[in-house]
Length: 264
Image (tube, rainbow, N blue to C red):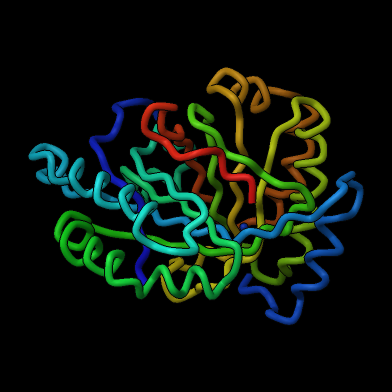
């Protein structure tokens, strides 16, 4: 199942162990601990990182691919949200080594909705006609949001994506405990919205077992949180459990060309 997000020319800016499938209920309990919420939102998150061929970016083929992917918003039933676009910046050595230039972020209410998207003729046509000819490499990670609150995304928001592999001997539930603590701190400081969970599509994930998106109102807000001492201290509890992290940032499309905020 290849599901990809839009590609346009990248911006030249600077630059979580294979979990036990039976641990889903445990993850939900962990994610709820210590975080106030009146409801639990559980969208399916679908992320695809794309490394575009340089000639495709130069010729405009990548831009056409982006447009084709964005158009799926009105063609595929069950697609709750979709964003395609360039990576703003690569923020970890693993991200730089992987080298994605573009990404797709989409959301679904259920796993069957994601499966239907993957096989829908419009999506298949975009993959075969636009993505495969223009991509040097792709990486895909899917997860069910284990955070207890909704994580809306609106035009102009800046999103930090983290894909991670656990250290040998570390269980996913331990990572989720650490992530819950760290995101609680960030939410208390600046109201940051997050979605995180265990990947359920290992075949396309290059070994990445955990995904998280954190949504900010601006690059300045993201950078301020990055430099916060309490956040850095909480994050240390996560990094000690990880073998590798892909960390990158992207900007959601402008109000003029993006769909309504995704509140799933």
